[in-house]
Amino acid sequence: MRAVIQRVSEASCKVEGKITGAIENGFLILLGISEEDTEEDLKWLAAKIANMRVFGDENGLMNKSISDINGNILLVSQFTLLAQTKKGNRPSFIKAARPDKAIPLYEKMVAELTILTQTTIETGIFGADMKISLVNDGPVTIIMDTADRERH
Image (cartoon, rainbow, N blue to C red; front, side, top):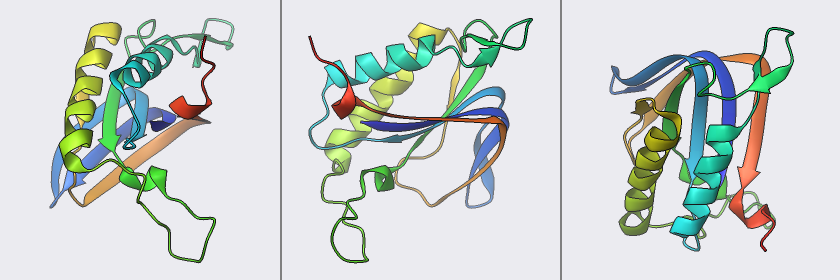
């Protein structure tokens, strides 16, 4: 799983001109799911996101998590995060999970983040042509890949 986590002061997702999800003050998360991803990867990534301390404290230091600030999350599925670009000029998306695998994992990520952060997770629509708007706060953008995690 790959995630691009952006700290935002606001973000929204539109499909066919209609807002499917909108937040203020929190994370816009773009999530790419690969064929190799497991529920273990999902749980690890969700815990890292829920506990990531990138929000300012009273001294302006990044010491607070999304839960500490009562922040919101907009989670958007984005298979293009799995693009392979080593060969040629047209990206290959062969490593991206097919919908029959990706949709259940995406839905489990929504559920897991809801439990861990105690907030409602706003979403896009899986597989739709989405228009994402955001105001990146900082800017703070973190890229995580479960393939890069340390395994014990």
